[in-house]
Image 1: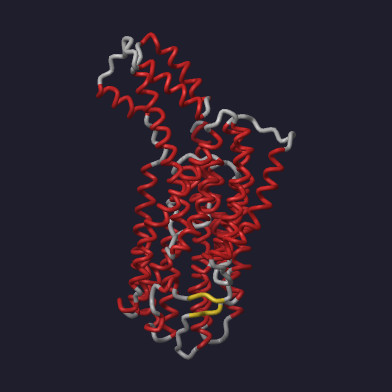
Image 2 (image 1 turned 90 degrees about the horizontal axis):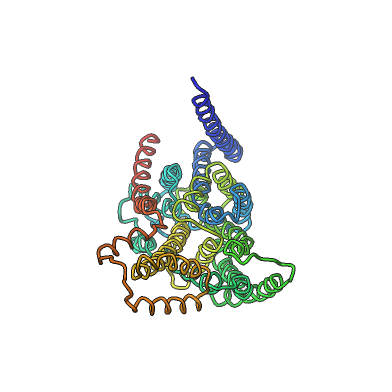
Length: 526
């Protein structure tokens, strides 16, 4: 056995140790939840409460492992945050959002997907919610193992739908709500992708396409960051405090100006200091977006923790309420005990810290290449998309928004790159072989020029091509083939197909798993 084989065995052993450590930490958290739930339970329903708490913690861990990547993945992919730094930031702000703004009361049947009055008795409600927690958590677990970002809200909605139908029948389903959820599969990514592409194109036109990028950045960045402050202020007031409190759009947007004004002044003053030296390169300007991008990731995590912790503790709260009542009644509005909310918050953090990096890499690196400007556009589009959808009354998914934003900037890059290079290749093909060195020199100067200079240079080049001085002998077919060679695929189609399939399967598979688990649980109980 040579040194190479020994090294490979040692590497595999270290990976196995890491997996065992993650498994051990997971078991430690679950056992802690079991012991605490057992201490909180009374003589009646103690076992069921412990099982429900374990299932709720399992769901919360899977939400943390998968969903939180939406908020920090772009920042990690852009190298604005290290993976460890992003995990630490997300843990703090996810927990803060869940504990501070998680809300006191939640609709136990998420999004009104089923009518709880048709369930009839509290015991059936307990089994419906247990099956939903197990099925939703299992599907998210599978998706996370393959690095696929899926909607955890859609997972629990599908699971509640499946177990509810298995318990009562299709009459329990609120079909208009199901229709809006299906529509959100299309609405969320399209809105986010359009906004992200628009913001990135604005940044390119106003900053990176200018000859003096430093001066352009000093003029443009204060307005961009101020708009980010306004959008996130509005976003947090409308959606960031979960069910505890929410403002309408006019109040949130109007008060957002109070945040945007001081931010504009502070950024403008900071960039105008003579000592603030920026390299006149794209990478130099990119570094200006690091701090705003970090703030955006933190605020997105806070809002996510305050809202999506309900996907785990909502069903758990319903089970706790049904067991505590003991009168067979079913309540559509359920108070959340603080210990259940804490379980959900800790579960988000544990799942993110132990298993989050897989989905973070998918979102930040494997769909398209991100830098700070692109990641900033994705983060800003998330807030603006939620605001727009809320005003229009459209349901949206945070996962679909994040992925749609990443895809949007990727396709914009692909379009601009392909259009730009096809144009240059076509022009180059009009000139004789002897002119190729001069054309290469022109292209090098063209890449460094600003937008007005590019326009003038292209006009001059077009005029030269019309002189017909021994043009290159390329046929139409050869030019078309050459264009395809130069077109770069900047969005990974294979990854997009995997994610799209996962999205389409989320609700139906969660529903099927949940229905099967409900039937098995009821048979065991009876």
